[in-house]
Image (cartoon, rainbow, N blue to C red; front, top):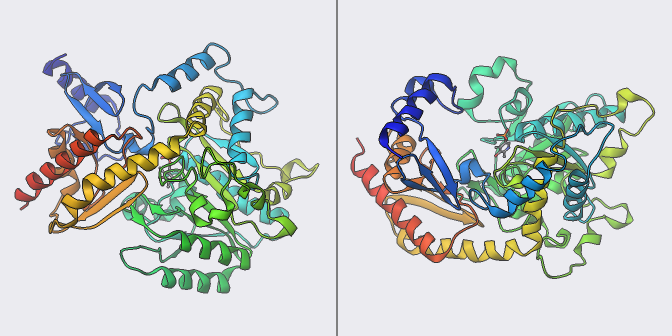
Length: 464
Ligand SMILES: *Cc1c(COP(=O)(O)O)cnc(C)c1O
């Protein structure tokens, strides 16, 4: 373990790898950190230095690195059946995973399609929505609606419903046109206005609109922009009224991140299935089946990826309703949903996801509630009165604040400075956020607030 080894990997990486989300011409000034191993919330480099993974390695690593339970599940699957194609074959890990996720919606979203990563789940949902309308003779419904500053991934279809200029502008000529509507933002107190804008668009264009796609409760890549569950209830009502599908992209906010297993559960406590409280039997599940043919309160599509395998293997899922599923039911192959990826329903990834669900069955949400309270306790009083920041906000295991007078290149400077404080953290613009593994105890929360404040002081005192 030495500096020479560290620098060798750095040099070879820059020489051979086209790093994601990176302008390679600038990468030498912000060299990638070669990591040798991970243990719990900590990553270790080749010099033996450690870094707290404050963003769960792009929001995937729910239980930290090298988690023993996930390792065991994957190893045992590896020795049994690592992979088999899911066309013409099936396997236990995929079936169990689909059944368990469906049960967590009380059966409301009972049909599960597999993708390989978040963006492919978005592609699947857009295609399914459009194709289901088409199969019902509504061929003119081929437009999509997304929210301002929303993020849904970077393949061509997903990028078309993404409103983050830095990712999309260069490809604009390639993208289908989507409607972009004002997003709710608790900082602006604009929920009614955002819903009114959505209503106006749906009133005018619903005959042409297939679906609205939204990140429930938190727009992650926009900079942890939060809104209230009441917005989601309003949006559900509008989509039902105007016969437009609602796609809940829970790729970042699913899997317990916001306090419930699905963020959507907070939109209506009544619809919550067994996941709302892991230990208490709930009658809510039956309600989700929408008795009497009423519209259920769930979205028409719900997407998961990122945390679903706890940062071990790529996997995504698209959950949808029986109504959507039935639109494809036919002897005619071309009316079917033929979309596939080589690794669709990969057994190793499904085994990892089942191990993640085991944790939630064993009471993970209660632990998360304790941990988010610890984060709040540690951060609120020292930072609430700090004149250098604004909009300190938290939802479940996401905590964020905006830095005032951050200066140019703040995110990069903060990220670099934080490394010296044993913190791996990547601000978005002038927003600093924590989206840590679910491994927070009181000393860790204290470490985090001290490391964040020390970094902030350092970066702001050097601001030009
Ligand atoms: C990360 C993310 C995606 C894209 O997932 P990838 O696995 O990176 O393709 C889509 N939507 C949201 C909300 C995300 O956070």
